[in-house]
Amino acid sequence: MNRGILFAALTAFVGSATAISCRRTADPKQLSAVDSLRTKIEAGALTLQELDVKHYTTADSILEAARPLFLDRFMDTLDRTTATLLGDQFVQLREAGRMESDHLVVRTQAEMMVGRLEALRMDLISGAIDDEAGATAIQRERTKANDLLPMVDQVIANYQAMQRVLERQALVDSILMSTLEHQYR
Image 1 (cartoon, one colour):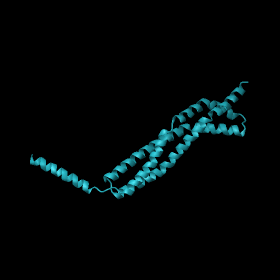
Image 2 (cartoon, rainbow, N blue to C red):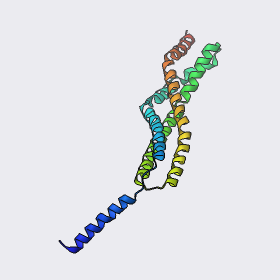
Image 3 (cartoon, one colour):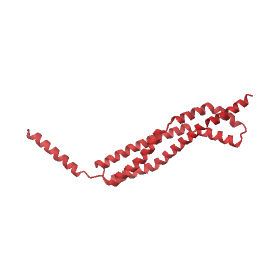
Image 4 (tube, helix red, strand yellow):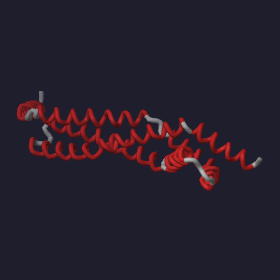
C-alpha cells in the first residue's frame, strides 16, 4: 500500500476520532426547552392547517351577494333582536377577508417557527453553538412564541366565529328575503 495513502487514511481517522471526542454534549435543559416550545407551536400550526380557510371565502361571497339586501333592510325600522342579528352578521361577513389573511399569515409564522426550532435543536445537538448562544437563541424563540401563541388562539376564535356566522346565514337569509317579498307585495 502506498505510504501516502496510508498516512492520509490514518490522519483522517485520528482527526475524526478527535473531533468526535471533543464534541460537547448538548445541555438537556436547553433541549427540553426547545422541545417544549416546538410542541406548543407545532400543535398550533397543525390546528391552523386543519381549519378550512374556504369558510372565509364563502362568507365573503355571501356578503357580496347579499349586501344590497342588508343595506335595504338597514334602512327599515327594525326591532332590537332583528337589528342585532343582521348587524352582527353583516359585520362578521365583512371581516371574512381580513380573517382569512390573518389566518394564513399566522399559520405561515407558526410553520416557520417550527422549522427554526428544529434547526436550533440540531445546532444544540451537533455542538454548533455553545451554551450561552443556545440560551440566547432559546430566549429569543420563547419571546417569539409568547407573541405568536395568542395570535394562534385569536385565529382559532375567529374561525369558530365564522362557523357560527355561516350556520346562522339561513336564518338571516330568511329575514332578508321576507323583507324583499314584503316590498314587492
